[in-house]
Length: 312
Image 1 (cartoon, rainbow, N blue to C red):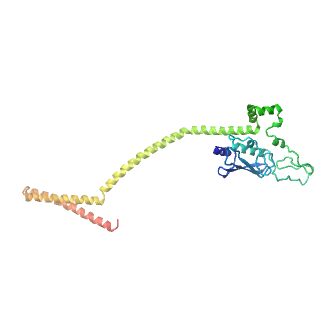
Image 2 (image 1 turned 45 degrees about the horizontal axis):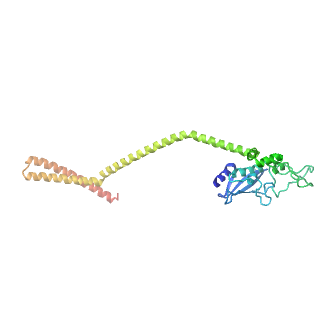
Image 3 (image 1 turned 90 degrees about the vertical axis):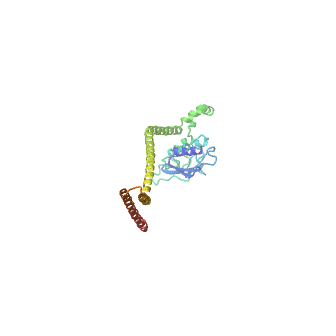
């Protein structure tokens, strides 16, 4: 719940700065051409306990404690519950200061250098004090600041009904201008969220299509990988079959086979199993084959020896 409250702060307000994560945040507002800052302190008991809002510099406003600068009289603070939205509370305070800019507590109105018959005005253009007159002159906005809910316009019967009838009180609160403004902003936000959701749904078909294409590419990649693995194994076997050392071994076996065959022909001739003509023909062929293979073997051995010496 604490995180959700912090999320509402960032949704309903601009320029939210994190001072201490989950504990302190800073929001800037424009107040009659002057930038003010509201520090939001979230105690360990938040959101069960109300947050502490401190305005800097300290403003002359009935919501603000003139000593500490803490915003104590804002409706959102006075009526705070665990179900309140931190973002809306801070937004309402900022709207109040933007629409009805109060003066800084230690600031005094400037006195005109000429046209002394005119009344000096404060930063927001409202008459604040008169030279030579009492300092408790009420500005045009003071009635609104003292009665933000418009309770002074209600009859005793209406006030009693507000106190006793929950439905009537809820309907009255919903019709307050700043509540309606917040409701309108919430509806606009919900509209944007809904439009974003619809846009996401519209993109879903294209996303599914690309997902299917990606899956087919993954299957093709796997197939090609298996093919590469099989070809790599065949290449390795061929490489071993045609390696110089393996060829040398095969030549040695072939030389030994041809030599043994020629010896067999000689033994059969000596035993009288073959005549002279057959013996000469077979013996010459086997010795010729033996000589060719032996020459190839010797040449290969020389080449391998030369490569070893060259450090290959």
